[in-house]
Length: 339
Image 1 (cartoon, rainbow, N blue to C red):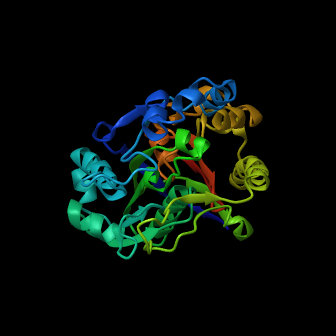
Image 2 (image 1 turned 90 degrees about the horizontal axis):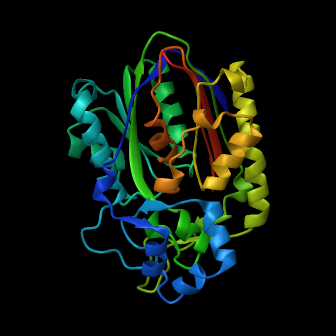
């Protein structure tokens, strides 16, 4: 689908307090999650090449993949609450007058309840509450939905994204183990005179939906159930995703009537270092205009692009792009002009 939403601006962006979550460098993570294999991996030229390609030097994890969750460990809900509390510290007046709260997550700890409503109650927020899930593009889709609400008459919408994908990561999948991180971010949208969201794109390829999925039904029926991601035809899907990243970028700019050189910032979902570096090079983007957080946070799923966006200072007149493509398979992009 292709839409637009004038008179919408991003008023603020905040992340969770990452100091609340244990941090692991790659060596420490391997020794903790794969103690029998760590030394062999670290001594292997092939494994060292993979580690360099992935480029994730540090990540925050609420639990070690492959291990039973410790009592009291943080969930996506607590990470989300931290992000909202940090935003409330400087935006209390605006957050007291919300029309809607949208919670975005693929690792929701309360799948039978409205996470947005629980979060609103915990943070003292009011407004229409609903949850949203569409793979790693869900964060961008959440902003699109918030923008459409504002276009339809709302004044202010809070979009919250939170994941602890570590609980769904198989410890024997080296690539996922070394790239996944946990985190949260929230984005405050508000009505404001101006061009706003010039173009919004979102789409899915249902035929590839089973490439990456948790196949065990919820709730797991037995103590030995492996409630983690499993992968299908990764080679075919990888080629599709590689092309889709580039196509969505060009399609969204064309819909907005802009060129890549018009962008002050291009903020992407980030799976690993080589992905973001190659994408910027292929699209002819100045690396200084592509904020990267993957080295210090890894792939956090839905909030990754928003954590990167938190590193950007948007100025009036800045044109920018937000884009995510991920397992599921779905994609989304927003091209906007900041008011």
